[in-house]
Image 1: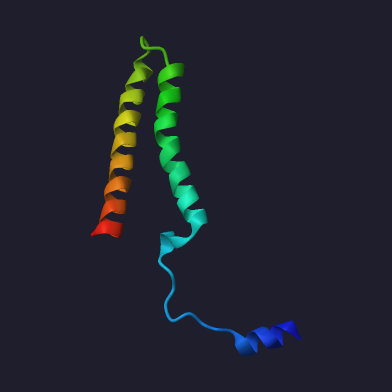
Image 2: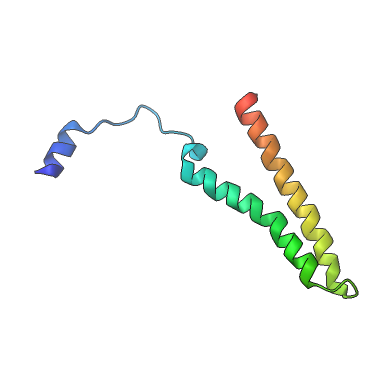
Length: 81
C-alpha cells in the first residue's frame, strides 16, 4: 500500500543537487582536510630528526599545504566566482 502511494505521488527532481551540497559531504571533506596537517604533525613528532625518513615529513607538509590551498581556492571559486 505504501509503495503504491509513493509510486503515485513521487516527485522527480528537475535537476539533481550538486555533489557537495549535503552536510555529510561537507563534514567528510572538512575531516579529510583537517586530517592532512595533523598527520604531518604526528609524523614530525614520531620520526626522529636524525633519521633519513624525516624527509617524508617535508613532503607531507608540502602535500598538506598544497591540498588545503587547492581546497580553499576551489571554495572561493565555487561560491564567490
